[in-house]
Length: 202
Ligand SMILES: Nc1nc2c(ncn2[C@@H]2O[C@H](COP(=O)(O)OP(=O)(O)OP(=O)(O)O)[C@@H](O)[C@H]2O)c(=O)[nH]1
Ligand SMILES: [Mg+2]
Image: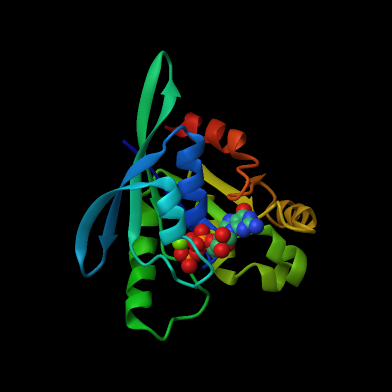
């Protein structure tokens, strides 16, 4: 089964994207697997509306486990399963907290093994702060790593926010040669295109 991983800096909308994408694919609830680097693995069936309330939010590093779910996509006359994995936000600097450092290392390890990388950027932040502050060094490193993979796509999120379209243009300009899709994890704008990309690699 293909593994599709969602990575990016803290707070860019990785968790909301995963949950909204599951909803877009027709799910109402999911069996979520939580894999922690020190506490092992647990799983729980949860409605997507409850998961959005519990798992997504403005607190930085809300996600510290690898949170994965099995989803399906239309494939020929049937459907094919894939694993969608939400991860810990990656930062430029080495975090003071050991458990956050460990969780980031866990994410990097999982990213190396994934078949597809959805790299989330916040295009509203690029519009607000400019490219150098709105995007981290870590984003450039992920994009460089992504060049080695067939399945690497940049999802420029929060396109619903004011001026975000300008941020999207800037991201497209700064990452030539990469596929960039403007999306909103809140309104599901751009999800049709993400689904088409996922179908290519599933
Ligand atoms: N307006 C808008 N807000 C969004 C969008 N995507 C995420 N958010 C908000 O941004 C905040 C962070 O979203 P999360 O999905 O928790 O972000 P994350 O990348 O998983 O964050 P960490 O787990 O802390 O790394 C939440 O308040 C979301 O509601 C979007 O497309 N548009
Ligand atoms: Mg998260």
